[in-house]
Length: 406
Ligand code: PLP
Image (spheres, rainbow, N blue to C red):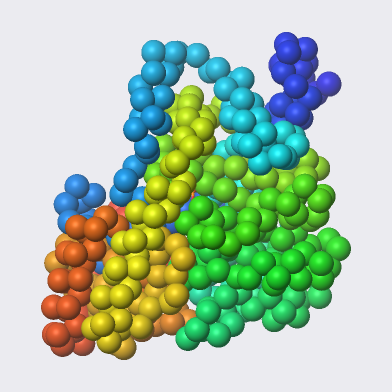
């Protein structure tokens, strides 16, 4: 036993799994902020935007927020907020494991999926074991690789004007010793999916020490097969899930890493088993148990996305074929100018990826928000934006460690 505290927790009825998480989580090593979509969106926002004013479609949030039952679950648990109630966390991961037919020891809860994403990169990459990611793709793993000192290899998406899927064969060919191969399905920012056959190919052909990090933050919004079966088969796969997107809990914070227990134990050296807020745990469990929630929200968001993309097409603007709550929109001019012009109208659209400088990412908001977006976008595209350069982040925001990301 490592300490009297660990001893007494281990003998107090907590499971071995819980005990190991605690023991492993005792040494925190991370030295870089764990970057989330919120940081990355803020880094490219042209000016400080009052979250209560204007329309915010720049951080892939869900404007619907938590479902009614989850809100009630939060309210109901508040009187017990003086307690740690750590058994609730095991109940949550156990509930998910049961629903998905997983070993409960292969599910670990965190305050959002950004944490296990960061920890997986820290654990399995180093200067000789690169991180391989798609481009344009979600950048958070790239910043974690700065901590581990791993080279980052960006592989362009295949068929960028068409399916814009991950180019799995090129990703596999990019390094003979990849530490982590990151697959975001559907992809942020394009909203496009990578075919199951390609993901199977990656699982079958990755070098034996490579971890496939399959980020399913947006998986509920599409019909593609899920990747949890690779975990059941004991593969070198860690799947990430979050409650921030479909479940509308980005500000409440809850996410899972799903992987073989030995892999989870390794990542939890950096963090995990952190006495998560009981409000978040209660809301997540309640959300999981709502029978129609996934289907109904998928439809609401999908309908608005389809309408918006159809309108853009009718106006002559191309987008990626998204199956998610975001898509890339071709503007035919420097995207930064469009972003600044839209922000001047208090419509905050998403950021730009250096590989596709004339495209901007649009998050699917509510029907009314997207009507306001259409009106403003039409006006902006009818004007000359060439003089527009986004101003610097003001004051202290400019000093944030992530301000250099823009
Ligand atoms: N993964 C992807 C692809 C994302 O887009 C995001 C957030 O936008 C996350 C992970 C992390 O989300 P959270 O930490 O809120 O669970």
